[in-house]
Length: 266
Image 1: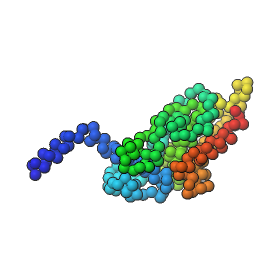
Image 2 (image 1 turned 90 degrees about the vertical axis):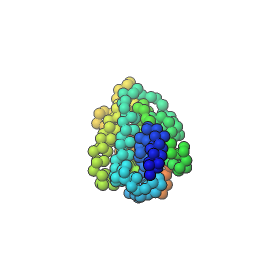
Image 3 (image 1 turned 60 degrees about the vertical axis):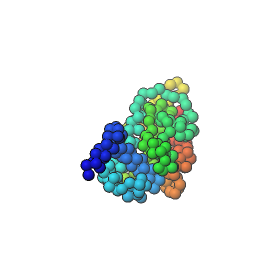
Image 4 (image 1 turned 60 degrees about the horizontal axis):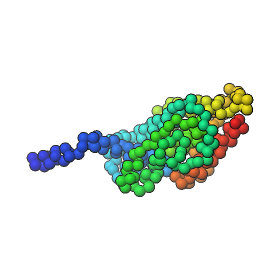
């Protein structure tokens, strides 16, 4: 008994203290990333905590230790969405960037406002591999999006957390904590889009192309489209629209419709 106890203590000492602290955090990150992938692919109502733990090959008790209920997973993912949104909108005073290529380039490595490619779908393509386990816990780092890049970046961000937008009304009905957070997110987006309209939509003489009421209405229409575009795509094609290989086509269509709203005033 004494020998085994000493051996166990020696083994524990062999593990660096930082690694011992990081292990639970890594498990929590893997749970969150896997939940995001499953929610996005199957829809949040169709994913149970049992399915998530089975996908990760961990016990349900291990999952509950980190996230006692599925609602807490949803709230944690909403926090990540809010953080990314804050990063994108962090500097609304950026000068206009006359680069309309932002509306046509959707390659993963060049997403507006995003630094690097850390696709959850890609990282889960080969579950269990060291590369997959490293990538699955990585979160994209966003930078404030210049004027021309903001709207595509918001659409891309919605795609990353598309389960929220596909099931938004249902989630709000079941999760009261999301209500205020979603309202705040919409208000921030609308204010940022309104500022972009003010800077981009100008006459040749440099005067605003819209009065205040029209600019407010245009900003609302754009945010409305950004919020419900993925839900619309899902209704059009429930089996394929929100699959990873549909990303480019879905986002390109969304960009074209947003551009159709703003082009008459450019």
